[in-house]
Image 1 (cartoon, rainbow, N blue to C red):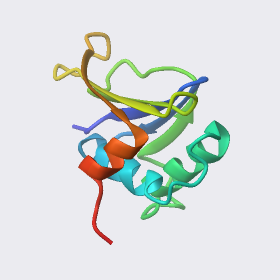
Image 2 (tube, rainbow, N blue to C red; image 1 turned 180 degrees about the vertical axis):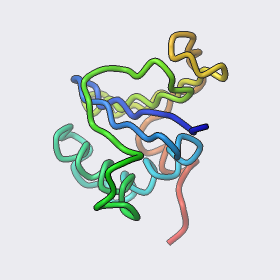
Image 3 (cartoon, one colour; image 1 turned 90 degrees about the vertical axis):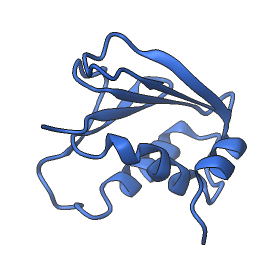
Length: 118
């Protein structure tokens, strides 16, 4: 059984995790903490994905980059660089088609709420 989730960078790229959906808010907050490239979706996508795979850079399983929503994710976090908004959606049944809009944050507020010290 997995812990499947994705981060959607508005504009079309999905960053997938098979085992760490429960940690995506922390991972995203760590990636945003430096406040660099908040307005650049291409660079920010790379920064986020590097944070996601930091302990498994050479691995062949567990992470992916794509252009579509997986059908079996229970968590989807949308990153809107143009408006600097984060939307966290969940689907506890993991069917990927029954998302509820849970919370919306500015980048600043997301880092403050989900941030890590250091």
